[in-house]
Image 1 (cartoon, rainbow, N blue to C red):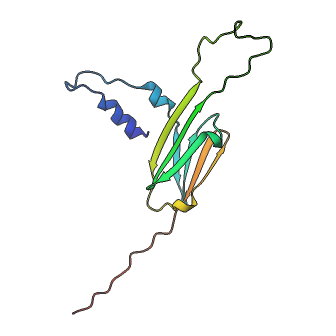
Image 2 (tube, one colour; image 1 turned 180 degrees about the vertical axis):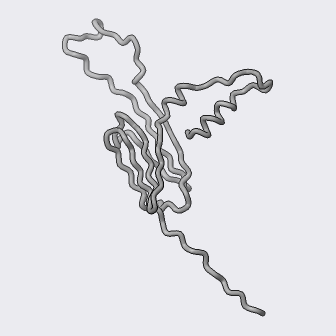
Image 3 (tube, rainbow, N blue to C red; image 1 turned 90 degrees about the horizontal axis):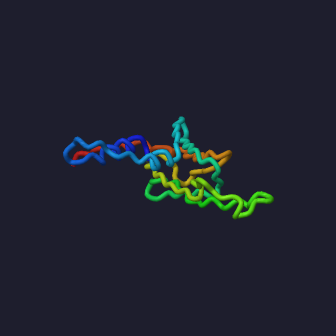
Length: 145
């Protein structure tokens, strides 16, 4: 989800009369990982914050020039502390059991899809997308018939 999508989703919830305030899905808005995309002379670079995720937790797919990054994971139950039994301790709040997201990006035409490279380090996913050389338009000579 990008800022424009968030903005559009906000106004899609208006009632037909135009006077009812839209609902805002805070869970959706704040559970989506944030992204930075940078362009340099020879590549694009995408960085996404994914704290606690490893390479095994992240799925990256490229189809028809659409890059999709997703993850679905369930937090494993921690082994109980020494001396702690199920009867002596219970969760009062438990919000970290399950997480899921998916984000898609349309790649520019000059990205070399064969040379994409992804790394994850310290909870930050980095995808480097080298640019391919753009061929100059071919001049076609006109002959008189």
